[in-house]
Amino acid sequence: MSFSYLKNKFKKKKEEEVKEDNNVEIIKLDELENVNEETSESTEQNEKKKEEEELLTQVMTRINEIENDIPRIKVSIDTLKSQIQELREEMEKLNKTIKDVMMLYEVVSQEVNPFKDQEKDNPLVNEIHNLSKQVEELRTEITQIKSDLRLLAMHGINIDELIYDVLEEGEL
Image 1 (tube, rainbow, N blue to C red):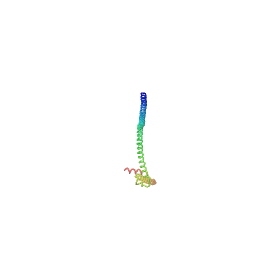
Image 2 (cartoon, helix red, strand yellow; image 1 turned 60 degrees about the vertical axis):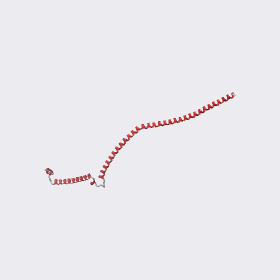
Image 3 (cartoon, rainbow, N blue to C red; image 1 turned 90 degrees about the vertical axis):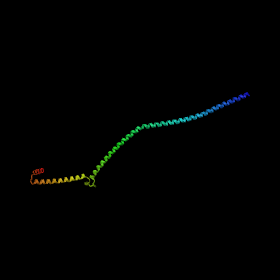
Image 4 (cartoon, rainbow, N blue to C red; image 1 turned 90 degrees about the horizontal axis):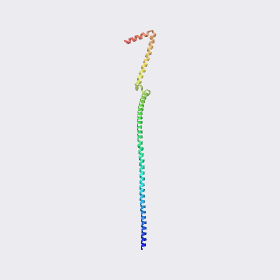
């Protein structure tokens, strides 16, 4: 009996050792699975962190680009403002010029327009007309004086004496 007892005991020990070994392995497998799960979770987290960091760096670079563009945009805006102001000034000059041209056109068209009564509308035309009448009257008077002087010269009257006498009478 003792031999069988010992044999059984050793057998059990072997089985227990195997069981323990199996348990250890199972625990190890479980641990490995847990570790794998943890590492997979940690790698997922690491990937998410990397993605977030990449996104953050992209956003930061874009912000830096925008910050660098702001001074250039300000300069462009200032340039455009000055150009707009220059255009406004030029437009005002053009408006003045157009008004002047329109006034000149009205003056010229009044003198040339055949449908308007020029004497009633324009005082300058009236003045010119009056001057023309006076010039014509002077021409006729000069013509009469010439003919009178010829007659006097033909009758032998001294014209120089006559002019001298007329001038003396005008001084008195």
